[in-house]
Image 1: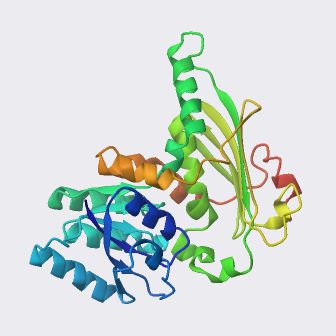
Image 2 (image 1 turned 30 degrees about the horizontal axis):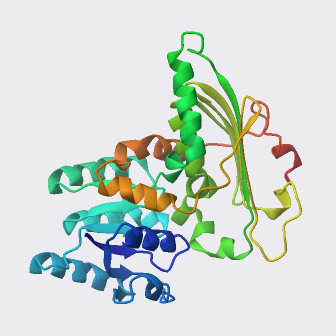
Amino acid sequence: MHNFAITGVAGYIAPRHLQAIRDTGNHLVAACDPHDSVGILDRYFPNTAFFSEFERFDRHLEKLKRADSEHKVDYVTVASPNHLHDAHCRLALRVGADVICEKPLVMNPWNLDALQAIEAETGQRVWTILQLRTLPSLLELKARIDAEARDAEGSGKRRKVELTYITGRGPWYDYSWKGQHERSGGIATNIGIHFFDMLMWLFGPAEVNEVHRLDTHRASGFMALRDADVSWYLSIDMADLPFEPEPGKRTTFRSIAVDGEEIEFSTGFTDLHTRVYEMTLAGEGFGIEHARPSIELVHAIRNATPNIDQGAPHPFLANAPK
């Protein structure tokens, strides 16, 4: 059994991490969040020490390390706002723990280099959650693509991919850290990174990157990957949904079409964090170099000058408000 601590325990994604820690037979000894709406802890680890001040959390982990007690932390889960990931990873490494960090691992590519240097100094590891790489339907697709690439007739084949992800968000989004570019990195970094990592895992690194639109609620563009041409569209505006949303429910539309064939990836998400935890605890998780391509890509996207006239726009772009 390993001891865990977690930052960002009051956040939306924290319950998936708490469940993964519990379901892999481990224990949560400390949790931190500036917000104190953390009753969720009672469902999973009711005896966890909780801190609303990061400095006291830091001191507690350091004390556990120096006491060399049975409560010394082995892993720190980082589920805090994106701009804090780098600092919270550094804390974990300093107190002799490995890290399991939500996406994006860091905001800027050069932060990865610094974390690798601290890994080398401490002997600890930084891991991240790239859960779409464990989705059964996408694993099947990757196996098929890899098999075709090994076949002489399939080698060099380029595919046409259309990615659409629309997930409705209310006005609260703009007032939270997620709607603040300097804290979340914007929609391409906060939401798109899941899918950009998946696409590059499937079809190779990005060789061309065009941004057609980039604002608070929408982003779109074109990427030429090694083995595919990708047109992508992201939106958090419910007006973009291709159907009437059901009252009182958050509605999401996911679509990825490869050469016109729709790939199912709307189901099977429930236990993916647990699967990534299992892999990580076995030393087979996703490290800094796995995360690097998508971190570099989203950094380029959010610093690009959008050009809506570039290339052929994604089908959803034509219907989106100007």
